Image (cartoon, rainbow, N blue to C red; front, side, top):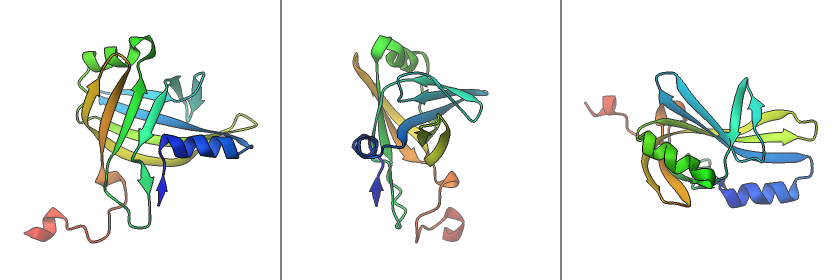
Length: 154
């Protein structure tokens, strides 16, 4: 099992000399509004979309052979009061979120290393940060072994 949390990404970046791994989040607010954020010093463009810089901390994002259904949490820094203002204006509950681990190589080429789909379950915020609790969106990920679907229960 690999834990794709912030500590793991920091270790990757310290050990890997051929570029940098970037944490990114895509939030679908509905109505055609999609927000793109990246934990990087400056904006990046990937797949035709501009990602806004925003410090983020991941916890619980993992992958394994057993395909766990556990969720994840993402904390976003509130520098410039941007995140708390966002949470006050929009209730993110139920919004679709894709977390991506991107790789920026030495030639400034970006590739997608890992992605996982979630839904926002809850949010808590204070003056320093906002923490989003995310649950797996199983329709877009592989289903864990031995999961019983609703249709099978009839």
